[in-house]
Image (cartoon, rainbow, N blue to C red; front, side):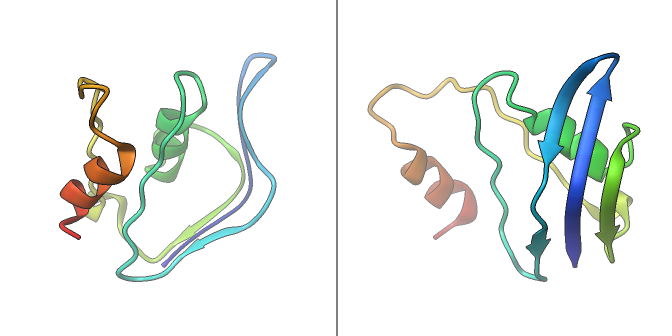
Length: 92
C-alpha cells in the first residue's frame, strides 16, 4: 500500500530527513509517528502527501486526498503513557 525507500529531504544544506532502509505498510496498518521536536515527523508526512520535494522513492496505491493525518500537540499530563494514548486513538 505504501513503500518508502532511501527518502531524503533537504532544506538548503540541512538534511531534515534521511530514511535509508525500506519501510513498507500494508492495507489496514495503523501507523503512528513519534519523535522529539525537529525529528522529521511533519517533514515525513509532507513528503508522503507530495507537499515537499524529496529524493528517493515513495510508492503508494493510496490517493493523497484519501489520506488523513492527526497532528497533536503534547498536552497530556505526565501520568498518561504513550501506550495509553495510542490505544485510545486506535481503539485497541
